[in-house]
Length: 127
Image (cartoon, rainbow, N blue to C red; front, side, top):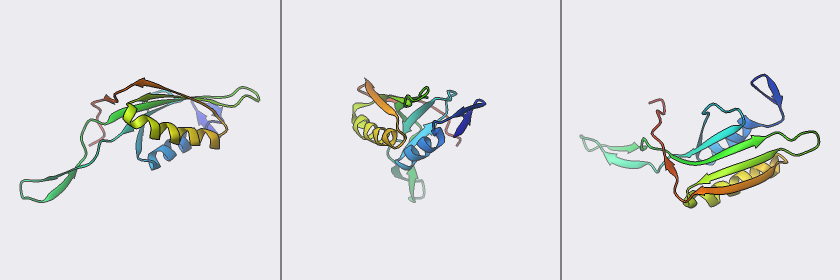
């Protein structure tokens, strides 16, 4: 069990975030204890610097591809997971991964494509 804002939770938020991270997604905490904001870093670009040395560069604009809302079940009810998807190109894979995770944790899963295109956000990534 995890503790969020002093409340004991059956929802394994940190484990879910880690599993999504292992699949190549970057999870950001934007201030909600029952929500995971899911980003996909754009492909690494290989460029040559001024001396001609090959250098990998990750673009500064990650793609915002989903929000996973996690709600506790009450009593014997299972937890409810709702996945909002942004970007049709990324939806199938992310939907499959989260659906598999929901089964592992005994949660009821729902998803909805909110936008055909992902959202580009300008965020400081702690450079």
